[in-house]
Length: 146
Picture 1 (cartoon, rainbow, N blue to C red):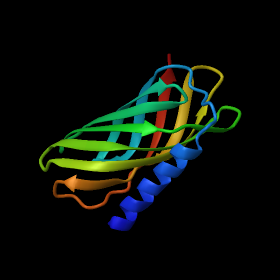
Picture 2 (cartoon, rainbow, N blue to C red):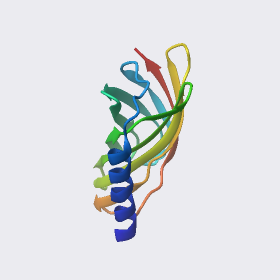
Picture 3 (cartoon, one colour):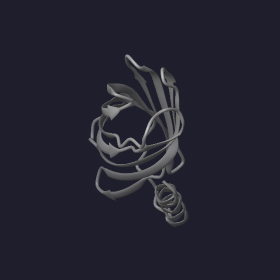
Picture 4 (cartoon, helix red, strand yellow):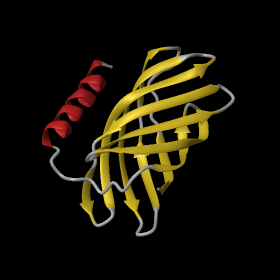
């Protein structure tokens, strides 16, 4: 467990320290994230630009409860329209059982010439409070840019 937390912390510091590229953010994005997260099949996905980086949030509604994840993503453009993003944040599941955890985020997305962004990400969560074990979370997202 300590190794996983150390790896996330080190990766975050390295990406933060080495980040000097301008991201291709065009504004706010709103859409859906499909994947294995809080035992849900889909959630509402939102991204808000912050200079070259962004705040990224997802809300899940399912039979267990309501889950919310808030992340800070560093953005690295690597080809025309493509973006790589690592991030870190927190997740909370308000339900039975309750969960509070640290969440990592690593993904790749493509911004089409029209206002649509498609991406895939890996979003593992390490629980701090709650009766859960480490949970990997793969997902696909589709967001409309406005």
